[in-house]
Length: 180
Image 1 (tube, one colour):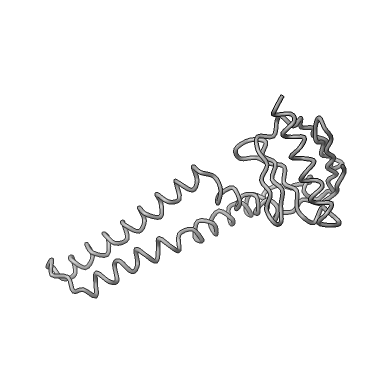
Image 2 (cartoon, helix red, strand yellow):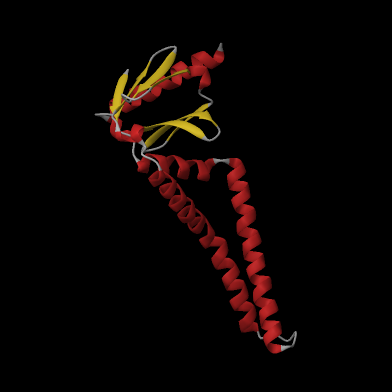
């Protein structure tokens, strides 16, 4: 089966977002950061209130403010982390010419391998090189390593039936190769 699509910055961002949301180690790290930041915020607020009043008799309103800020940061940090990550990716993307991203990519899958060609380079991956496959509503991510994947956007397919056929074939080829 052969498909064609032009990779975009949005595809790269979508993969990174998916990976951040689904990587067990990143999810664990971000949970630690959320909890640590929230606790630190509460402690800093309470120490500041103590320094201002010179008393441990801190009014209940100050506790409410401290815990309110802690809770705010706990829930706001995921979007703050993604916003920061997105800006860094966009900045890095603008540093290079990214010639391969500006070219139409032809991706063909067969029983033994997949091959991508964008006019500047050709890469061939045997199915055993694919660690895992993840399918979302908008993308197919075929992981080559923990942080690198072949990203196939939904727009590469003329119809949903063609997309489903591609997914089924890719999963079948991947299973057959990894079962052997």
